Amino acid sequence: MKFNLIKINKFFGEKQVLRDINIKLDGNRVVGLLGPNGAGKTTLMRIICGFYGTSEGAILINNRKVNSKDKKYKQMIGYLPENNPLYGY
Image 1: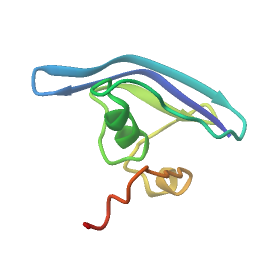
Image 2: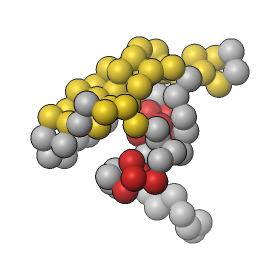
Image 3: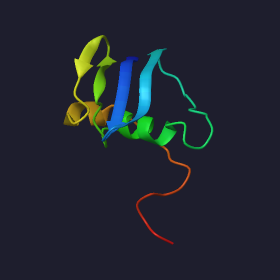
């Protein structure tokens, strides 16, 4: 599976939290997303998983533009968070 993020931008109101993010992955891989607090890792993961939409940019799978809200797209994405976000402690 080929996975591309092209010029992903995300705004919350006037605040831009992601700027021109480009990622290209070919084949089946395990990938880590690293960066300091506030760098936009969680926002980017929420976009990839379909929890947020992009303000600008495109997500391509196998060179085909997909909508992050599409059920077929969500079935292709796996996400393993550090903490369990579904249940409180």
